[in-house]
Image 1 (cartoon, helix red, strand yellow):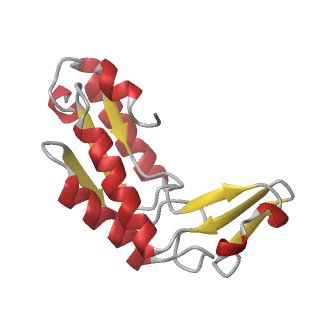
Image 2: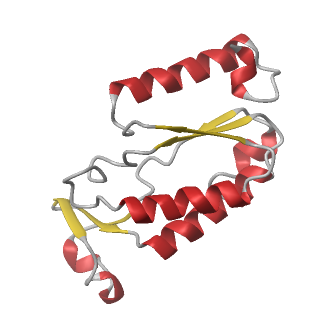
Image 3: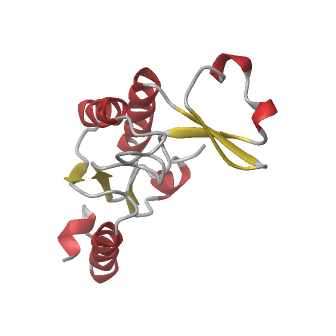
Length: 152
């Protein structure tokens, strides 16, 4: 039921694909065999991550869009084009712009009347955080707006 309840309740949402580029497992020995030939990052002894491939990112984009399309309240999707996680950046172990583009393309194709904003920033850039804070401020100033940006 992730990404469903807030929409059903009409709660305003600003959505960004933070850490959407990988799946989490515990120690490396908990990674299923089918994923062991993938790009894997061992964050610490209790966190091992596996990079999603382009086809999986596309499916994820479509699934998220379908869930957001059912939202009863305002929704804004903000996409950081330079990466979705600390490891998904140029030179990082999960840097895969093609897979990220597959996610964005599927999301755009599947979203109905939901605003999607693409920005040339990384998710961990301070400017990206400022941009999201401005969007939240817009929601607070005008909670009845049909999209978060109307409140600004």
